[in-house]
Image (cartoon, rainbow, N blue to C red; front, side, top):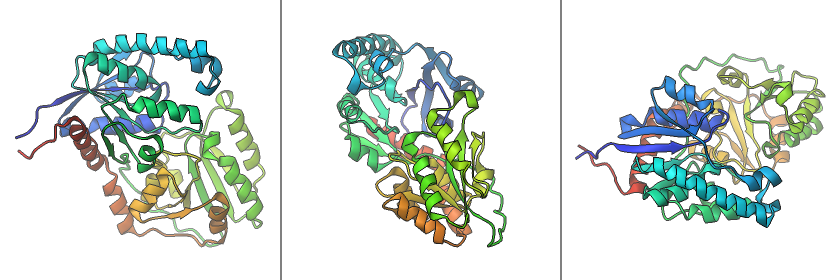
Length: 376
């Protein structure tokens, strides 16, 4: 017997569209085939809305709770007692508003961390099971402590890596499901002469926890011959750049072999096919979608131990894991141009395809709700 369709609301503020939002879109496209009827609750001006509407996915526009403690101090650890009191009051008011919406659904999935407190409390008030999709990581101890407490307010947690569950603890139930990657057509990588630079790619937001500067500085010291070219893809327009990105651009200007920061691109497959290695050296990383994308495009992933990307390398058997950036850069500087077998690329592409991951994701949601599907 097949279970009835589950009405699910995914809650996300999404003031920008980056990897997490692209993942959500891919998952939502697989929802109805797996017995879920999705709605997305998002802020009124979210750039995600036209992308959802183009896919005929229902949208509810909403005004979420403000976070005065974060807005005033920038960190929970630096917030005053009065700020924290205002934070709690704002969340409670927001939870009451969101509860009116959650009552219409069988399950609420919090897909945005800063909206998760009002979803957890709102789910309790509405008597609607609330599951958090945990795909964000933190540096600060205060944030981790708050998250550990917050997770206990959810019915369950779904996360893309074991790292997140072990680092932040879990609710009463948890599931680990990787994220989907969609690459429709893969062109053959060009044959490059041995004399051409080894190209290393870093893709995504350019922020301190990605440790782009550390990698660039290490390459400048280790690559005396200028044999390695570094491409950092994900730059912002000049009027939106952070001081960190500005510094990254200054450092890469000191390279002499075509290394550069490249503006954020709508698709990165072509740039990935130029790369011999895809590198992720983030201080903390929940998953590492570019590791999968790079592998499918023929670039060998190099990552650090104890990270979400390292779990991908272990799962696929493709790429290398290092203890620190120095060892990773030393390997690059001594390496010949790597080649990934076509059979490996096909296997990885299939394992992380949206239909396969969508099936795992929604089957996990059913299991976490105690509503496993039985074959018809």
